[in-house]
Structure formats: C-alpha cells, structure tokens
Image (tube, rainbow, N blue to C red; front, side, top):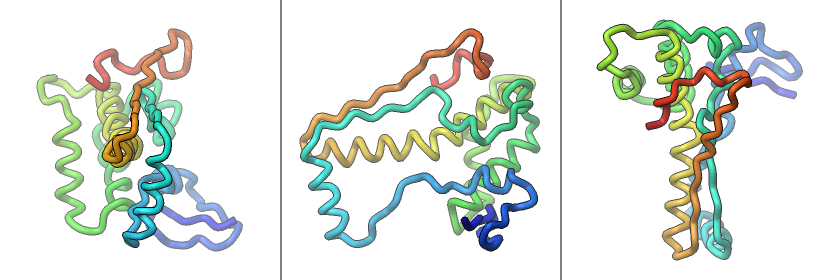
Length: 173
C-alpha cells in the first residue's frame, strides 16, 4: 500500500504518514475530467441508456472533522487550515484568491459573533458542496442533456440521538 500525503509527496510503500490528518483532505474521490473526446462520448452514450437517480445527504464531509470538532465546533484558524489544505490539493493557481472566496461565500456575515459550531457548519457546507454536491449535479446535468430521466434527491433525515444531531437547522438552505 502506498500513502500519498496532502502535499503530494509519496511517503513510500507501506509507511503511513506520522500525522493521519495528512490523509483526511487528500481528495481521492471526485470528478474525473476525460480529456479524450471519444472516451468521454463513449462514457456518456453508455450512461444515457439508463434513467439515473442521484442523491446526497445533508452533510457529506463529516470525515474532515474530529469528534471534538463535530461536538464543539471549530475556530476560524482551524477552518482556514482545513480549507487551505483542500484548495492546495485541488487547484494549481490563484490559491489565495480561491481560499478567500470560499471563506467569504461560506461565512454568515449577518451573525455578529462567529460561534465555533457555526464555523464548523459553514466549513462542512463548503467541503460538501465542492467534493460531492457539485460533481453530483454536474453528472445529472450531463445525463439529462441526453434526454433521459434524471432524478436528484437530498436525504435530510436528522437523528435525534446520533453523533451529528447538532448540525444547525438552517444548514443547506
């Protein structure tokens, strides 16, 4: 087994990183862009033979947080570190501007005080949108362009006694 660190360096075969959090935001799952037009067309033609149902859950990216983060929230500096790691692993250019835009768009500026739970929820929403929701919507758009039925749902059940019952009720609206 090989481990690839968040900074893109190979840690060698069979050697996990010293800090397991290095792996958390190494975005191994996500959209793949097919640069070969014929391969892309073949894939889309195979996909267009079927109706498609896609779904997301309310909070897709809880894996990026520790148990304490989930329970108590996170401070702004932890949010910046998480988002900076994601941006660095996803984009090549204009990293500072992209990070600033994400923080700006996913901060509720109407709240006079940024509570750690709210910061956690906003960070969770940003990561979920980028890593899961946007690729799912893109897939639905590509599929529906071929005049097939495409269905998209959001599973929004919130357990009363589970680990993540504390996510704010206005999340995702």
